[in-house]
Length: 220
Image 1 (tube, rainbow, N blue to C red):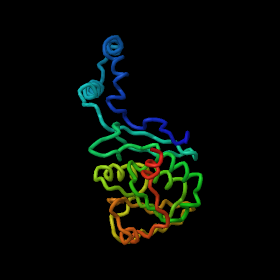
Image 2: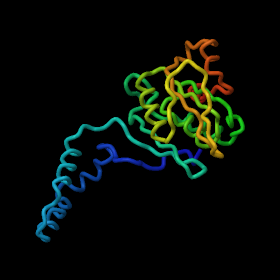
Image 3: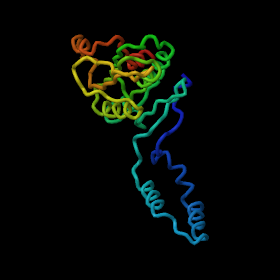
Image 4: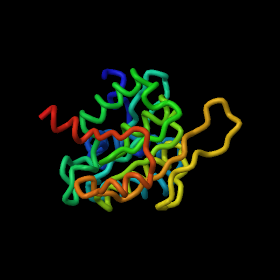
């Protein structure tokens, strides 16, 4: 899944990412930067000093933003944790299994096209967002049992331009659209797939159920 690897940071890098650059500004270059303003008889913008001071004094961030390039040239942008285990869960990062499952889905779009998909243990949301962008599902239901993971997941869904349906026990209904490739109806719910019952699953009326976490277990 070479095309599904993270390509670039889209937003202001975390402080830990900036450390290498900040080291080069410690003495000679920073003094040289100030000397340029002195030679031109101008004062540096206060905002620049404030921004530098904020970066130097800030605690190291535990979040970063990554963009994963899809074969179509489109991308999936995610806010992820920089730690494998954070806040008592491993669900705040994108695992290799999610990349493999997304790659398989992109190679087999007919499995998802115009169907309602339920994903168990969605984590950061990469697999589902890739399917929503590449496979034209009718509706997509993201789920996770951890409240912090679910909060990050919802943010990532919105970050990628999808609208979230309100939490509901009613079956998902596809949006009415005249577009050739309308966006799927999307929902994110708190769901423990170790405890979920057949009756609960039937409420969502999924045509396809997937779980990258199961694939991760098989990969070891």
